[in-house]
Image 1 (spheres, rainbow, N blue to C red):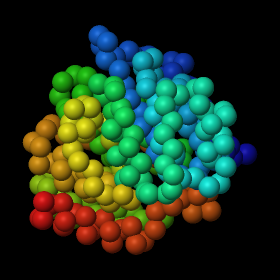
Image 2 (image 1 turned 45 degrees about the horizontal axis):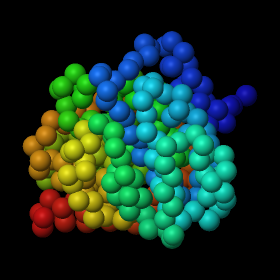
Image 3 (image 1 turned 90 degrees about the horizontal axis):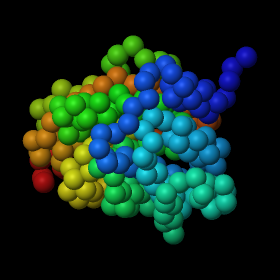
Image 4 (image 1 turned 180 degrees about the horizontal axis):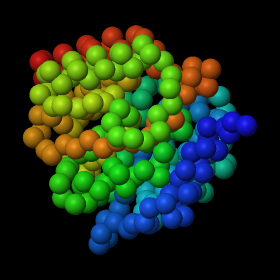
Length: 258
């Protein structure tokens, strides 16, 4: 019998915290901020918050930005979630993922910042994978790649993978980076790096924009393999083909005209 997606990820996070890998703490008085943009995720928001809370590292600041949800998500945030997280910020209308991240990143106070989608496609139990290169002082920014390493990866849309490969390749041509997954949600930053960048894109153009701007800073960028529990459109996936064209436009815009 197949388990619901949220149940599977919650189990993964709990298992990791319970002993599949050593529980780690941030050195000294360092703090981790997790920024969760959220729009119409009433079926997954509690699951992702529980998984983030169960993830390694005790000193976590969880910041949720509700981007004008209209499906009952806001009610859940105000009643169930508010006591469980450090901050919830409500946008009065839907502005887009980039706008939600701009708000959440600006509010972060941790030494390190991780971006976490609210849709249960990414496993918070893997935060140590993202943070280890930074904590070892090898990296300033880490991308979590869905296309490298031997971790689980749900088999889904062929044309999505082709589109992702095209966008990553095009981005790499302009940035001279050799990323395998520019469009990944999972990115970890030293806070001063990400807060030092002005985020202009309001929607899914955030990924190529931030990649282009980070590449120009000359900071140390690493990539690590992560799991990916993708969802279908029937399960709530939001990105559409037109967002791919916007991403191409943003690659050119932020690499050539900025």
